[in-house]
Image (cartoon, rainbow, N blue to C red):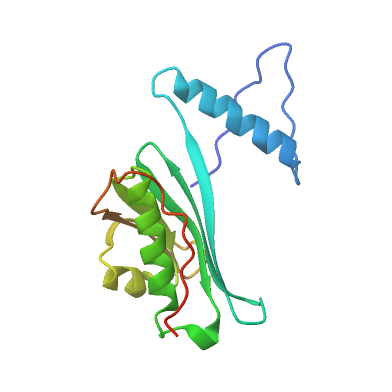
Length: 163
């Protein structure tokens, strides 16, 4: 498909391309978008992370997520290669889902291009796909309804493996 001609910029304004936008610009843009959404749908969001560390304190796995509008979004999950297939990823996901449900989230969603089978085993279902992102791969969008949503408060306890 050919790229269409650019429409003119409104008089009195200029349009620039920033190749490495500063964090302050990205944060300001996000705040403006959230303020716009808040005109019709109140916006509140919170972020959290789960860290899986070995006995020496080294990072062995982790998960980053955000909660807003009743949904938990898992934006990053990583487990060291030596722990894959041993339950570490499942433990991270279960803990995140429990935290989301306790905070009032009714569902969770994420995207992946390498671990679709893992998430399907955990009860996720596909709701979309984006081909060639990255090139030659398909990025899948998955979701899952959370059981036990609306518990009293977020679970902030630490969990360790049984002795």
